[in-house]
Structure formats: structure tokens, C-alpha cells
Image 1 (cartoon, rainbow, N blue to C red):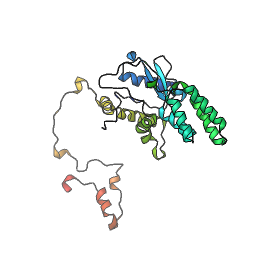
Image 2: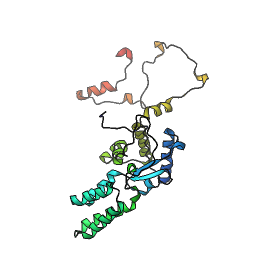
Image 3: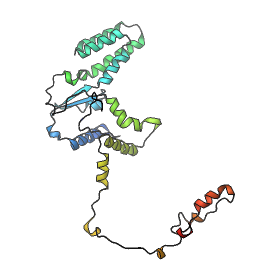
Image 4: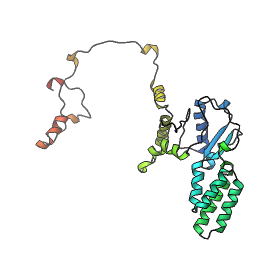
Length: 264
């Protein structure tokens, strides 16, 4: 692995097609399988601003952060002027959020193009609705626990990258569509694969401990004389169905013929 690349420790993933409330419970269950949730002192909830994601940051230990990719992309799309874009990013990274919102509003009032004004108004609304998450968690002065030896706190990464690499690339390409049950089953398998738990899960599902009465070892032998000349009849005697008589289909007749081992 490239020295400049990092891997999340004890990564878990969860995906499903269900209501927000049910998914939140499922997500908490998946986390609890890997971590002792009673010992979690702080959580960073990274999302694109959707209400169902923000609803997970409801207790004092959770802090919502607007996903940096979505946040910065919104600025790039709304500000076609490079100088305006640089000014917004400068205000953002210097944590001058009130000044940033004032600047966007003033810029929207000053442009003459209706489409540009609309995009700037949408940016102002987007940032206003997620104002508590605009500043990166690493810039908030949070009292973070000391990182374990050999580990370090990094940025949250790109949310869309994880969605694509774990779920989207397999399930959304080539205009695929899924039933709810089929989509749920595949989503769970993909999450297990991404977190390197698939093999272990399948092993646990297929490892069946039989009662002792079924563990008796039986050794026997079969006589070749007991083997019928023709074993099995396929589907309702279709082995006797007629094949085309022309020489072009000779290979088909040979495939369909059932012969005993002695004749082969």
C-alpha cells in the first residue's frame, strides 16, 4: 500500500432498504457487534445534510459534520467566478461562517444572471440548513481521546467514494433493478465483503454441529453387480426422446444417448 494512503481500523458497513428508524437500529446493532458502545465517548457523523443522517447526531456524544466533498462541490458549482470561489473557501477554512453566509447572500443580490442567482440562493440555503456541520471536526477543538499507538485521526474521507465502492458499483450499474428482498440480501453480502467478514459469516452459517447419535461412522461397500445398467431417467423419460436424423445433428444424438459404463 502507498505510504500516503490510510486504512480505517475496524471498519464496519451497513446498508439496507427500509425505513429510517429501522435502519438506524440496524446500524447501531452492526456497530455494537464490533465495538463496546458503552465506552464510546464521542462520535463524528459525516453526511451530505440529509435529515435522516443528521438524526443520528442526537446525543451529546455525536457531532455532525457536513461531508467535505459535498460541501466543497456545492461552492464550486454555485460560484463560477474563481475569485468568488476562493473567497468562499478562505472564509470557510478560517471558520468565519457568519461572514461566509453574508458574502454568499450579498453575491446573490449583486449578480444579474437569474440562473447564477438561483444557484447562489440554493448554496446559501444548503449551508444555512447545515451550519452546525460546516466546520471540520478537527477544527472544532473537540476533546478527542488519545489515539491508540500506531494510529492517528484522519479526515472523514469521501462519503460518496465509500457508497460507490461498497454498494453502488455492484448494484447501480447497467440499469440494474432489485426487489426489496433481493436488494437487501445483496447489500448485506457486499457490506460483509467490504469489512472482511463474509468468509467468517458464511463459515458460521454452514458449520452445523450434529448430535452425537448422528456421528457414528459407517463403512460399507457396493457391488458392481448391483448397479443398474442405466442409472436415472432424467426428466420423465426424456432420454428416449427422438433426435433429428440428419448427419448435422449426430453430435446431439451422441450427447443425448444414455449408455452404461461398459459400453463407453
